[in-house]
Length: 380
Image 1 (cartoon, helix red, strand yellow):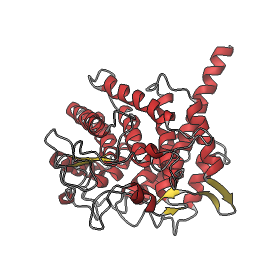
Image 2 (spheres, rainbow, N blue to C red):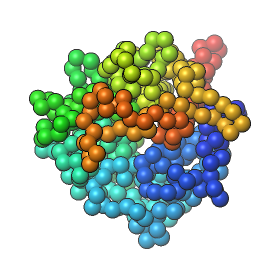
Image 3 (cartoon, rainbow, N blue to C red):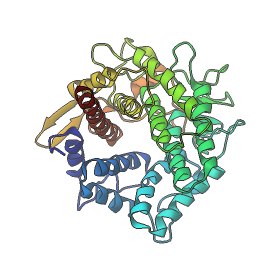
C-alpha cells in the first residue's frame, strides 16, 4: 500500500485533525456522518492492512458503547433512521473482539427498526417527527445495517425487510420521465415540499441519489445469492445507473447538486453526491452488479473529482464544493424548491464530503486492481 495513494492521503489528513487521538467531529456525538467516516476507515484498514485505522474506529465507537451495551446519547424513542448508521461499525468490532457489549448494541438498534413507524405499505418513516415520509437518505442509514445483521445472525426475514425498503422507495420516488429518484416521498401529501398528486418531492438531489445508490451496493454485498428479490434490486440499480450516466456532466464527468436541472443558472457541480455516485457505480461494476455500465464512467468521474474539487498543501488533502446539508420540512421549513437547494451553504473539507471521497478512492483502487488482474489473465 503506497503512502501516495489517495485513500491513504485522505485518511491521514482526517487523522491530522485529531486531538489526543480523537477527531472532534467524530467523537462529539452519535451521528450518521461520523458513522460513515468510521466505516470508510474500517474498510481501509482491511484493504491496506494498516491496523491503526481499525484502532481509530474502535476508540471512537468505545466512546459511545457502554459496557452493558447501551449507547450513549442514543434514544430508541426518537425513531430516527439516521441513528442506525453508526451501528454498521459494531459488526466488525464484535467479530474481532467477541465482546458482548457490541452484540447488545446491535440488538438495541434492531429493536428500533422493529418498532420503526411505517407507511401503509410498510415503508420506514425517516424519523418519528416526519410522519408518513420516506427519504432516500434513510435507506442508506438502515438497510446495509439490517442486511449485515440478517447475514451475521442468520435472520432471513431481515433480507426481506431490506428488499421491501429498497424497492418501495424506488417505486414511490422514481420520476418515469427521467428515471431519477426524487429526494423523498410523503404518503400523506400534507407537506408543502411534495407534489400533491404523486407525493414526491420536487427534485432529484444528487446526494440523495448517492445515499440510495450506496445503500444498494452496501446491502447487496450481504444478500444470499438465492434471495428472491436480489435480482430485482440489481435490475433497478442497473436501470438507474444508466439514468445517472445520462445526467453526468460531459465535460467534467461530475454530477450537479440537482440532477434534473443540468445547465440551469446557479446549479453547480457538487462534491459529496459526485463522490457517492462514483463509489456506488465503481463498487457495482467491481462486484458484477452492473453488467451494462462502461467502467469509463467512473474513471471519468473520479478524475473529475481530483481535477475540479481537490487541492493539496502542507496540511494535506482538501475537498471543495460540498453542500453542507439539505433536507425537507422541519422547524425552519425547507420547501424542496430549486431556490432552497441552491441556498444551502457550500463548504470545504466537511466530513459529509470527505468521507464519500475516501470511500470513492478506496473503491477505485479496488476496481483498478480487478481490471489489472483481468488484463493480466487475457495477456497470459
